[in-house]
Length: 229
Ligand SMILES: *Cc1c(COP(=O)(O)O)cnc(C)c1O
Image (tube, rainbow, N blue to C red; front, side):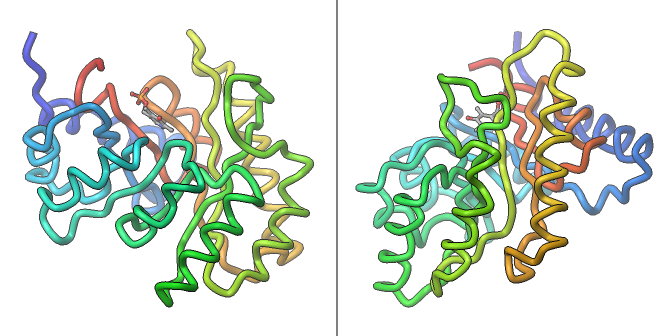
């Protein structure tokens, strides 16, 4: 069966608009990140042709290979676990690192960003569902880590990210999205972030509508656009 990226995108965008309408949100508040991991540049270019500029990759090597093959205004998001020894390779090639899952990693990003005299925009990854198989900070550790990272001059914490469990029924993940949204609002109200937070990255092919209803500003959709991997 052949996959039409254009058709798939049209369908996803309709579903995004409907979820925004249900939640009384402005569709402009939600950015679709096309998760292109394992998919060829030719398919990414089909998405680009329909106006998509934000793409998500989970491996540093793949991101680095694809970057020079895509037009200049392509925005590559790193969404997968980042090892400290790869930070220097990717730091100036990605617009946003979604997967900062430890203080140690943030320290390394600070070091490498300082060397290049740039400011790295990041999200803190939170393991809301406390799954052993997943990376991310536990909810109760986010505030104290953020207090430290907010003091790093070459990092700007733009928000929070979570990867919800793989479930049959997306409704099962609503509680996790609500919990992350609550944490985000608490942090903003206490100004722990120095006012830099504005992004909530949550929701994938199976559950992005629920995530939008619960406040996502970035959704990461792979299979729903490019087909199964
Ligand atoms: C692969 C991946 C996605 C996209 O998953 P789909 O179910 O294909 O939409 C989103 N976020 C992260 C972190 C991923 O690794």
